[in-house]
Length: 282
Image 1 (cartoon, helix red, strand yellow):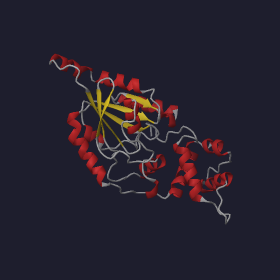
Image 2 (cartoon, rainbow, N blue to C red):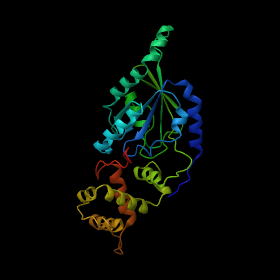
Image 3 (tube, one colour):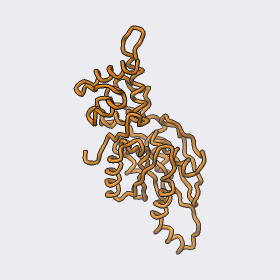
Image 4 (cartoon, rainbow, N blue to C red):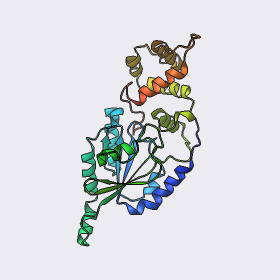
């Protein structure tokens, strides 16, 4: 699973961020709360540099409460204001605006001293594909200002979006990095749908996910699928779940493709449970 994937639009996005950073006052970095390490592009720190930044842990309602609390403590210890955003919900929007205005307090005061009044706060939002940036923008704008989708790579070019509270936001396409050196990172991105399933072996991916869930807590699988999990054999567990769900072909063989899609889909929608795959201490 050592994947080389650096489409041309990724290079253009990196250049877009570098070119437009001087136009903005603050950066929203959107990460997936289930995989806070794997969903942070290591190039973002270098690209954003010393600009004020807010960490938005998106899809927090898909991650465990224990994991969310641990990561919030971690990022705030690093000096980044951090807040949770639930998928397709807007209850954190007011808090995000308050955090933004607080972070811009000193700069606002200097602008007033120079006679600059009511200048919009300009924001850049960055993150990997499928992190949920467009959903957050639409929640901030209280309307559908930018295209959203459940597949990575929906946003194609930069978009300036006017928001309430005298805010302006620059959306950018999702940016990954040139090569996944760490197989765990590649798997985590694939588990959560940040990498298109078409470039992966879906059946193997689902098997690896089952093996990971068994390590975390086999009760997730046992309670969802009403089966007895074989903690020593992920493939056996996958076949048990397939039979339970009726994923059998006419030849009476296991339909691995069908059960793989079911398991991946139910994990991604937190039907199996709210699960965090990465913790700060590890």
